[in-house]
View 1 (cartoon, rainbow, N blue to C red):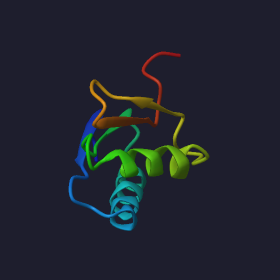
View 2: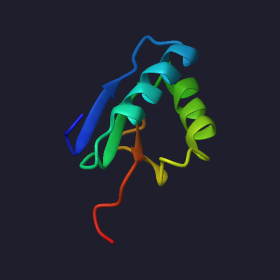
View 3: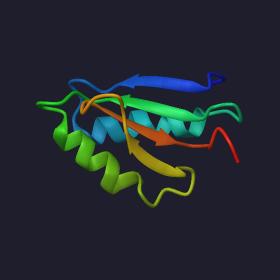
View 4: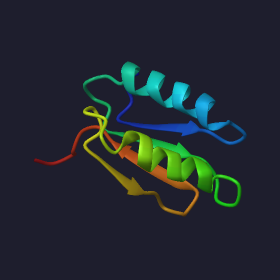
Length: 83
């Protein structure tokens, strides 16, 4: 994965399935990948949003977790743009 900002659509996935997809994306993230934008949706995606915060807050590859442009998106920051 060589893109700086990667979008991953998690609509319709169960938590276990979403974890597998996110873990695979984190493992495949290259040196130039800064953010994983996780699109989980708002109404039925709130359980995924909660899981993302709880599951990845202590992941050593995730620098921080932040909300996206709308409530249906969560961003995992793997590398800061500026130091």
